[in-house]
Length: 408
Picture 1 (cartoon, rainbow, N blue to C red):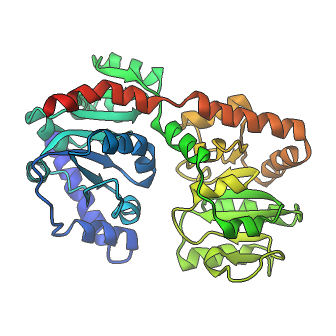
Picture 2: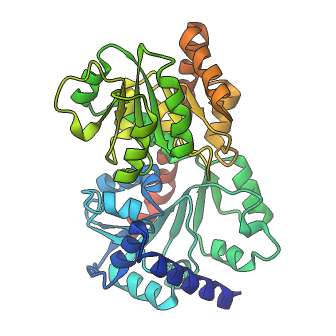
Picture 3: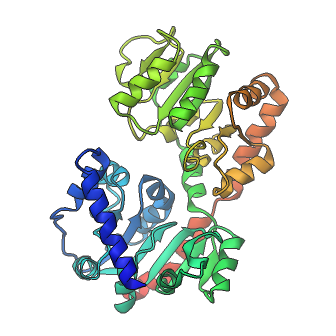
C-alpha cells in the first residue's frame, strides 16, 4: 500500500507540473516549492494549513500560541497557493513555506531543519511521511477542528495505510460526537470533542470588524444583499435579483477574480449598474452592484449586509457560512451542503436556507425581505448559534499547553 501511496504522490506532482504550463495556480504550486530556502531553527512550533480557509480556522490557536510562547519560533506551511500567496507575510509566523512534496526524504529534511517541538494540523491533510517522521522522532502531532465521515478512506476496507497515518497522531480535537465515535470504531481513543475553532475566529471578527469607509458610502442607508465566494452558477442566480429589488444594493465577492471572470460577471448584470471595488473613485449613489475584485475583504464586508448568499453550493460544496452568520445574517446557499455540519445546523434552525434554482432563491429572498418577523428570527438564531459554539480554542490550549511547557 505504501508503494501505491508513493506512486500516487508522484503522479499528482507530474499532473500539477503539466498543468503549470497553462494554469496559474498550478504554476505557483510548482514554482513555490522549487528550491525553497529553509531557515534552520533550534526550536519551533509547526502549524500546517491546507489553504486560506484552514488558516482562518486554525488562526485562534495560532494567535494564542504566539502570545503564550513568545520564545518559540512559529513555522507555517500551506499546501495550496491560495493560502500561501495571501498569508506568506503574516506577522504571526517567523517563517512561511509551501509544504514540500510528501516523500520520506523531504519529510526528514524539513523536520530536521525547522526542529519542531510539536506540529498542529488543522482539519484536513494527512500525509504519511511527514506524520511518520514526527512519530519516529517522538514529536507530538495534534489535529485540531478535525471532522470525520463514514465515506472517508479511513473507514474503507482498502484504507489500511490511511488508518496507519491516523495512528501517528498524538491527539485529535474533533468537531462533533460522530467524529469521535468513528475514530473509536478504529480503536483510536485519543480524541476530545472540542468543537470547531472557526466559531472562535468568526465570532471574534464580528465583535471587532474592520471598518471600510468606501463600503459605508456605497451602502448609504440602503439594505444590502451580499454574495460571498461565488462561482458562475451562483452569480447567474444573483443577477436575477438585482432588478427585482431596486431599493437594495448588492455586493458580490467572486471566488475567482481574474479579469476574465470579472468581465463575465459584469456582462450578466444590468447595464450601467455595476462598479468594481478597485475603481471606486467617485460617489456610488447611482450604482446598485459592487464587485469585490480582491482577496481578503469578505469577512469584514458582512458587517454592512442584511442577507448573505454563500457560493459554491452548485459545485464541490459551499464556502464559509459562519462568517456571515456571526453578524446575524440569514444565509442562503445551493444544494451541495451535506458535508458541512454548520450548514445543516443552520437549516434546522431556519437561520440558513438551501435553494436549488432561481425560483427557490426568489422565494427565500422575498420571505426575508418582506416578512420582518421571519427575518428577525433567522437573524437572531444565526448569531446565537455561532456564539453558543465558541470555546474550542480554550479546550485545545488547555490540553496541549503543558506539553509545550515541559519542553522548556
